[in-house]
Image 1 (cartoon, rainbow, N blue to C red):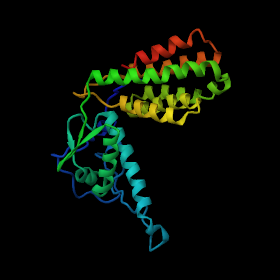
Image 2 (cartoon, one colour):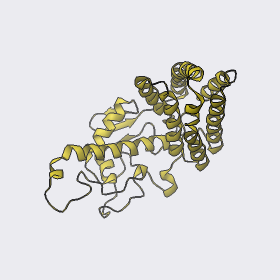
Image 3 (spheres, rainbow, N blue to C red):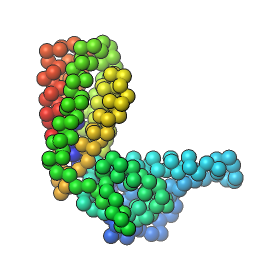
Length: 269
């Protein structure tokens, strides 16, 4: 649950998300995987993927296909935010990113507009979208809000949820341990959110889960300057706290749980 994690999954292949001032590569065959595209999305995605041989009812559903492409682009951009490929302060153009993804600017622009609603980017008229620059203060404020929301709920659930329901979450805790060991910030960010989402899901409060998920995702965006905040060892320690906390919840050790929950969130800032 460490926040502001960074690295670069794309950087392992020398990938970079182009800022507005960087020209897109040309001449790439449609459908050929592009090592420079963030989030592992293959080049050549079109609004009509997969292609069909002739006219069909599916051809009359452009909005459905566009929504699917937009969703893929949005997820890829979120990964690029976590890994630092989308760097704070830089401006990114929808047409240029569209070239990299092999799509028109429309689904990229729509995905960026969603990120703007989430506070990850801001609109720069006639230029594109700038990745929001955040400092340690913003990170600490997010951590405080998350703690105020999640800790009381977790302590209440610790008293009311039976052991077998906690035990059912063990695969998610173990997933976070494996993701931390991989050293991939994006993989760990997703597994971390999945574990917390499942724990809060035991409350049955969908609105709570939605708000907590949004705060958690925002807390994982990079800080200004692009410095790496958490190495693999830090992620491993954070994931180990998931397992320790879950062990205490399964055992019903209510004397230990409050301290573990508080400690876990204290490390978030």
